[in-house]
Amino acid sequence: MRPGLLTHPTIPVALHGVAPRSILGKRWWDKTRVDTYDKAGRRCQACGSEPGEGGLYGNGGRLEAHECYNINYDTGVVLLDEIVALCALCHRFVHSGRLRILYESDVMTHSEVMKVLDRGMKILHDANLQPFAGTYLLYEELKGTSEVVALQEGLEIPDESKVQWSEWHLVLEGKKYYSLYSSREEWHEYWRLHGV
Image (cartoon, rainbow, N blue to C red; front, side, top):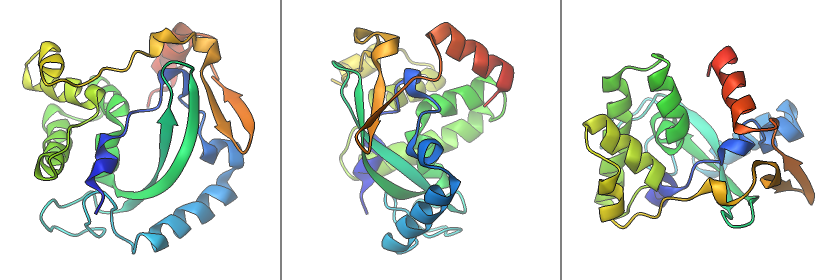
């Protein structure tokens, strides 16, 4: 088990939709996913559960592949570190920004989101690890507490605004891939119209 996978930061907003699976195509992604599941022994690499298993933490019933990135908030450079197998619940926990959007769009209820967050927080607590600041802020917000709590806990809140929107890029196989949107406003409008 590698519960530390649940501490990974979310992809910067400027790079939503820019991912190896979309760049390299469905055939590459399907093969990579299957290889990832096989290497992981068909278990979630964060919580250790198998698809559909109740176990200590339970899971979301299936494995999903997740891209882990090295994100430099000072330069806007994002590098692919690895692709890992996560159960659906661990995967949702890692994608706390998307989890927020699902909640705010009424796709997931408060109790459904809290189930994901409570479970992930327990896994991290049991491993003596702290969550990514954005995940922690969502958790505290939905519990009714404030952003001050994250700062008191000593969590560093990454500042994506230190880098101009147009400078954020993913480096994959030696090539740079920039945002699909010219600004945060264009990104917001796209997701407002097309949903999650």
